[in-house]
Structures are given as C-alpha cells and as structure tokens.
Length: 430
Ligand code: PSV
Ligand code: MN
Image 1 (cartoon, protein in one colour):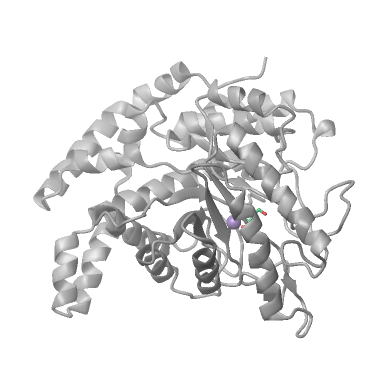
Image 2 (spheres, rainbow, N blue to C red):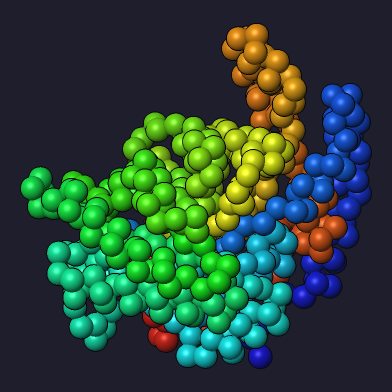
C-alpha cells in the first residue's frame, strides 16, 4: 500500500499552531479594518483561488547539462497523481493537474480519471508534445512540427494534437495547450511568413477538432530550443493567430517566455482587453526561461500581474476566464516543496491584488499623481497577508505551515523506499 497523507495528520500538525494563527489573524483584521478592509472578504478570495499543478513538475527537472535525480521520484502517471494529491492536501488550492502527452499517456483514460477522482483531483489543460521525437515515431520533429516544410510531418503533429483532444475529453479536461519548439537557429533557415502560415494552417485543423466546450490555448516563446527565431515568438503573433482561429482560441502567457525586462503585466492587460487571455504558466526567472519557483526572483512583478487580473475580475471584463497553471522545473529542490510554496505565492499575490485600494488608485491616476498611485500599489504589496493564507488553508483542511507538515510527514523518505531508483525513468523534464 502506497503511503498517503491523512487529514488527521494535518489536523494534528495544525493544533499547536492554532493559537498564534488566531492571534495574528485578529491583529491583521484590526489593522485592515482601520483601512476599511474586511479581512473575511480576503480570506474568501484565498479560499476561492485555484492553480493547476503540472504533472511534469513533480519529477526532478534538469538542465541541458545534467539531471540530478531526487529520491522517491514518481515513476509513472499514477505516482505523479499521488504527489499531486499530497500537494493538494497540504495547500488546498491545487485540485487540478495539467497533463503532458505522451509523457503521461494512460493505458486506460477511464481508470486514470477514476484514480484522480478518488483523490479529489481532476484534469486541467492538456499539453501536446511535438518538440521531441518519441521512440518508434515515423517522422522526425528535428526541423519543426506544426510548421514543418513537409506536409507529412505537419499531418503527424496535427494527429498527435487531435489525439490529445480526444484523451482530454475522456479525462474531463476542458482545454488544450499547444506549445511548439519550431523555429530556426540561423538567419535564412526559416522563411518567417511561410512558416507562420503553415503553423496556422495546422492549427486550423486542430481547432476544428475541439470537443464541445473545449478551449484552445497557444503558448508563445521568443527562443529555445530554437535560438535565432521561433514561429510563435511573442504575444502579438499569438494574438493574431488566436483571432484568425476563432472565439475558442486564446493566448497563453508563460512568465518565462519573454525577453528580459518586458512589461509582462502590460501584455496581460492587453490580452484581457482584447478578450484573448487564455491564462498562465506561472514560474519565475532571472535570465531566460529558467522555470524557477513562482515569486522567487521577481515577486513584485508577480503582484503586478495579479493586480491586472484582479482588476479585470472586479470589473467583470467580458470573456475573462483565465486558467492558472504552474510550469516549473525543480532541479535543486524537492518538487513537492517547490510546487506547494509556488502555489502559496500565487494565492499571496492574488489576495494582495484584492487588497489594492482601487478607488484610491483610480483617483491618483485621474489626478496624474504618480507617487500616490505607486504607493497605493505598494501598500497592498507590503502588507503581510500570511495569516489570511494560513487561515484559509486551515479552514479548507490544509496545513497552516505546509512545508513543515510535509517534512514532518516523512512523505519523501517513504516514497524513496516505495519507488526504488533502479526502476525510475524520465519523471521530470530536462
Ligand atoms: C516550453 O518551455 C514550456 O513552457 C511548454 O509549456 C512546455 O509544455 C513545458 O515548458 C514543458 O516542456
Ligand atoms: Mn510553459
């Protein structure tokens, strides 16, 4: 029998921490009341927040130089779900999983769905993979997939995406995310306009196969694995394509897929305004697509992104229904610990977004008072909302201190025994 974290264990871990939590929560409540903010309104928001966990994130990641496997890594999709259940039990905002096909191809979709359901889990966006060749694959993606010069390669890549749609439908997913590695390493290698046209042509076929109620997300990225040019290089091209495709196509923002110093929160606002924001792959980075933990490098940027999202939510912008997902690679940490803390960082940014005094901000903007506008944002950003997050988690049955509870549970050492290293294969991304 595989070891699972019990609700009783979490409650027992919480017991000695309840007293300080009540005290801190009450204190913060009084502080916020002086600012005209009702703390329970924020706690409600924390309870409502959801972010999906990437199946590929629970295995140890790597770089193009090496991958240093961690102990007790999941060896198959079922064990990945077990780790996702642990994350969800402790933080209670991650009941959905984003699968990557064929990495997570199930033998029986019905069985996998039932396995997830029995653990209180469901499936968020499906992800196709035409950036790698799979064993036994007929045609290679070395020079591209959906935009390949050879129509037979394009057809193969389209068929794979259609398969993902069918699978996603069986699993209860509601959206499909397409990211391709297509691009060029040398000037002249790829004809920019023709490659984009071929990509769009392929996407149209996939779009036509969307099951009822499904949305299609396309994910842009300016470089890597192609180092000179990519086919879907930025949000503008992505927006053009989603418009060309139709109302069920949206542009997905991966925080690591932009040039350094790009104003991502403004891109978010633009996509919201144009009704084309699909949602996010949250992570953080210093230099490129580093896939580091959300909020670990540029927490203020994360807050500013959520400031836009909350603004759209409060204004009930039409067609605003973003899917929140994590997309990280954990090379030096326990992936469960990283995913839990990242999920918590997102709730923090979301709650802080709700803490922004929108009337004061608007007034400062109307008066062109730049300093007060910034201060209004900073007041929300510098407010320590940790007691709200902990209270929400506790009320939902999660851990007041997820990291401490996880370590106290001995989950990882137990998994190291249950999942012997010799049988481990490609659980994460490199
Ligand atoms: C590509 O860098 C990406 O962000 C895409 O979302 C992939 O599906 C994911 O990482 C995993 O390789
Ligand atoms: Mn991504």
